[in-house]
Amino acid sequence: MSDHAVLHVKGRILVGPDEVRDELWVVGGRVSYDRPAGAQEIRTVEGWALPGLVDAHCHVGLGPHGPVDSDVAEKQALTDREAGTLLIRDAGSPSDTRWVDDREDLPKIIRAGRHIARTRRYIRNFAHEIEPDELVAYVAQEARRGDGWVKLVGDWIDRDLGDLSACWPREAVEAAIAEAHRLGARVTAHCFAESSLRDLVEAGIDCIEHATGLTEDLIPLFAERGVAIVPTLVNIATFPSLAAGGESRYPRWSAHMRRLHERRYDTVRGAYDAGIPVYVGTDAGGSLAHGLVAGEVAELVTAGIPAVEALSATSWGARAWLGRPGLEEGAPADLVVYEADPRADVRVLAAPRRVVLNGLVVQ
Image (cartoon, rainbow, N blue to C red):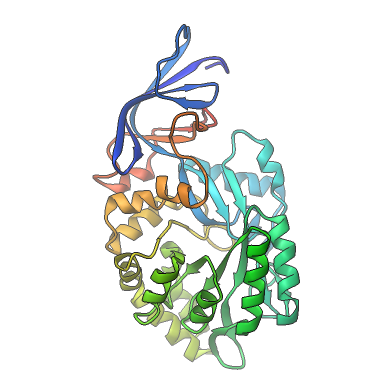
């Protein structure tokens, strides 16, 4: 198919939860719902089409021991693309992946800069490790480096305590979040436990990653403030093995991790029922494989979120939240085509028939 050919997507186009079209055309890499006049070369793809999927918690350029080279990062991005993920919110990476922006065949990335963690309170080589009096300056630095997001590590194991605990004093996060907002960036934070959540939300945070510590008394606060969560349930599934590995040295932490895991589905369903925005993220990178977006959508459905809402959390809803277009007229033609209706069974997402990125069929 040449650069001047027209792509015709025919079947059912899921533009949004309440808008379904029978066909769309891709002209000059953009979506059109009008048949182009005079098109001489037309390629037709049939099936059920969704906007390119979103992984709102993904780490391109990050490996188990920190930053990776560009060849590995490229493989990560291609694996996500093959799974239908065409828009990534990179929730913290020590690598410079700006070169991806010059590649029309790789997913689009919205970066949150590098993780910002407390000294010796996160995974080695992943984050800037600093003290509270430096937090505002580092948040300002990463806000300028990122694409409208900053990523904090809100809690981690305190080895003296032997359990998860909050990393930052209230006044530090208040000042840091205010600075990020002044610079036009939103702030999210890694949080497994309960202890850091109230301070972060009341300080004005925009999103919480994992959110396993969300409790009944905190849910109304999240809902009132409109704070989103990205549960990363495919990552939370690793909690029992993590707990087993640390039990001899940190039994209190291990028991806590098991409790968080056991109630994970109730936590997510309680958040959804209260009106808290929930989005799909896999936590790919580090120790977790890329390309798991379909599994995360299925996990949200297992937690009790209706299929259409789980699809929204990785397609039109997630794109609107991140300020990126879906399949509206004139938008970049980033879409995934499936054999069957994913609203009837979200497991369809695991096997894309075609992937179209910037108007080109890349798979």
